[in-house]
Amino acid sequence: MLSASGLAKSHITPQGPLPLFRELSITLNHGESVALMGESGCGKSTLLHILAGLESADSGSIWINQHDLCKMNDSQRAKFRRYHLGIIFQQLNLIPSLNILDNLAFQARLAKRFDSEWMAHLAEQLGIEGLLKRYPAELSGGQQQRVAIGRALSAKAPFLLADEPTGSLDEANAEQVMKLMLSLVRETQTTLLMVTHSAHLAAQLDRSLTLSQGCLR
Image 1 (tube, rainbow, N blue to C red):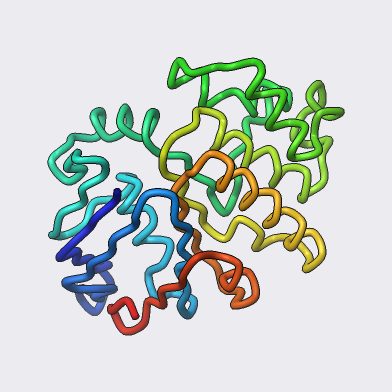
Image 2 (cartoon, rainbow, N blue to C red; image 1 turned 90 degrees about the vertical axis):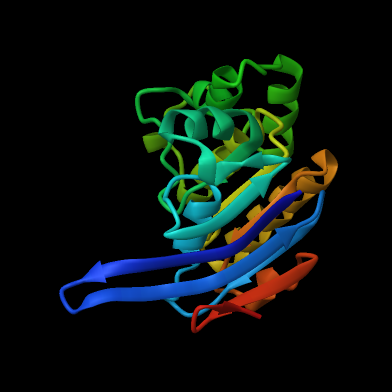
C-alpha cells in the first residue's frame, strides 16, 4: 500500500512561494488503478515525482510498503525506486545507445530481477517482439511508448507511476497502448497511479482523483 499524508509543496517564484498543495493526502491500495486528473500546472506531475522520491515535499510523510520515503536520503530513495517503483515519464527517457531489448531489460537488470521468459512475454504482449534489435530512434512514438511501459514493468515492481503515458499519441494509438498497459498491470497485480488529462482513459481505471486548488477530490 502507498499512503501519503500532510503533503505540502510550493514553487519559488520572483513574487515569492507559490503553493501547489497543502495538507494533501492520498492512499493507493494493492492492485488498484487510479487516475490523477486536473488542469495544466495544478501540480499533478510534481505530486507524482514526490511520490516517486524524485522531488522532496516541503512537509508531510509518504509510506510505501511500510517504508518512510521522506526519511531517506537521495541514495536510499534511488535504491528504493529500483525495487519498488516502475516509472513512465512524459519524455519516455529511453536510452538511445541501447537497443530495444536492452532498454526493455534496463530496470530489471538494475534490480537484479532479469527474467528472460518475462522479457519475452512483455515483448509479445506489447507487440514489439520483432523490434528488439532496433534502436529507439528507429521506432515510432507508439512503439517507443510500448517499450517504456515494458521497461517500467520489467522488474515486477509493486507500484507503477505513469505521467501522461499516452499524451503524445493520437487517439487510436493511445487507446491501444492503454489497453496493453492495463492488461499487464492487472496480470501482475501492480498498483497504478496515472496522470492523465483524458476523462475517457481515466474511466478505464478503478477510480479517479482530481487535483484542484491544492486539494484532491
